[in-house]
Length: 430
Image (cartoon, rainbow, N blue to C red; front, side, top):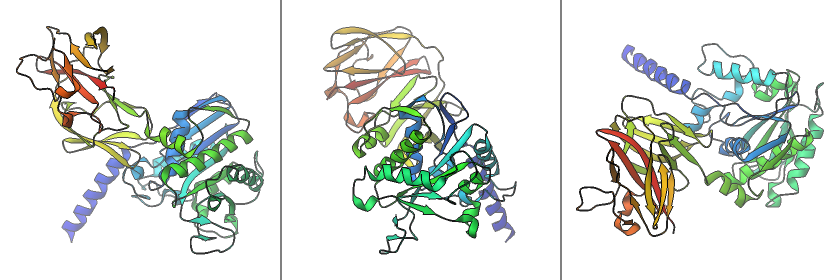
């Protein structure tokens, strides 16, 4: 029994240490003022519509007037684990919480943003089951369901934007003008928390209104595909911004197909001061012999706050929210720190390239020889001792070594003596 207790304690300690590694982001857009909208996604890791909507607000919107603060990954560890909450439901920790709770620091930090005097309205994004209806229609369309509704804890509070029910009705009216199907209609869900809902008394929005902040929950249905949920969340967020006088520009078409493209296209991760850049839209699910710096944590930058790298033994998983995009099988090696430029001959034209570049090729490319570096075109085989000063076409590289699933992108790696120097990608146009 003592051994079992020790193992359980060790497991919980390791779990806690892993969770502490994934702190949430606060992204501020626009110009800070005392009329700030705070948007929260990812309080529960099994609700991707919510955290993907918040991340798109962070990456694909320009705030041209006003102030928006975005937390796209409040419970980041939960998101990565595809769990509602490895340490319990985080949205039930805003009333009383022991300082021994593994998520205590996270809760205290988000509370400080909620209470910030600049913040006047909070929207917490969720994915809920079925379709909320004020009266019972059937099992999936009833008052016990949570999908497709705007949630308030009570009709009014004494605060700016305190007419909660009225604002929620305006949001619903706007969303309902852009429905994909009539079944997706939004309704107001007043939980009347103060009247005795003990569970909702522990929630983020109830904490907010008790600190005189207008707060709303926005629910999209889990019966919808993820990008359809994001579509409805973003419609609601745009209406909240309009109500607050916040102006914006978006980088995609507000349509389910436009939202899908925004989620899945033009995502990338760069490593080691941009000496390696990986486009992730169609990345292979497994890349072998990947040059990882010896004895160090991977240094990376991502195009989206939901992207991260998770180490598991000698493999490194690239995670996008709760989706695993690829695994990198580590080839541990020391890295050279220089960042020179090189000459490539692309379809007969000489161009200068640097580590981290992605070079587009129609027919063939040639890597000019540099006496200081050894070049390895991954997947290219030849009887030559060097892989420089030779024209290489797509059909001369084994497709299984491509970076992407389409077989268009290949790695050109540079080495300085026994150290890895950097990587350039060549992308053949289809």
